[in-house]
Image (cartoon, rainbow, N blue to C red; front, side, top):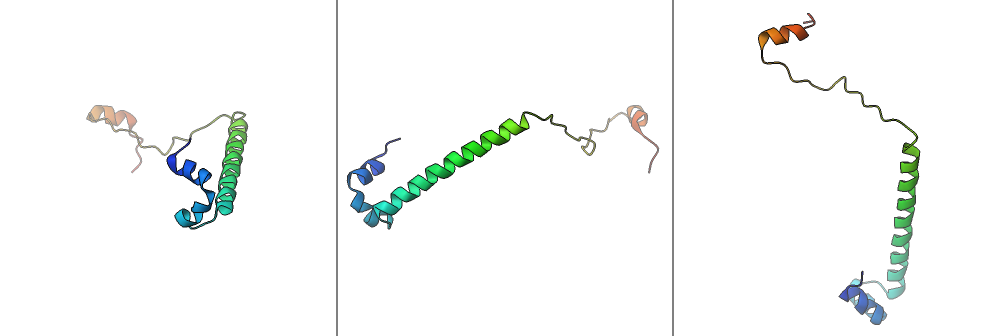
Length: 83
């Protein structure tokens, strides 16, 4: 995506020091590093997704709360006798 700022910096690379506080070489190194890290994260995500396709997902729902019936007779059906 081409923005005005990016176009300006590419046209006048020596202005990056004045605008950003770093020189143009440092800026382009940071951009290259950002692209490299983005690509690495994308590859890692793809590897993890590929690994996860080999497994089934099992959710333990034993500790989840269930809605208690409001009717007393209905409640008695589910009462285990524990206090």
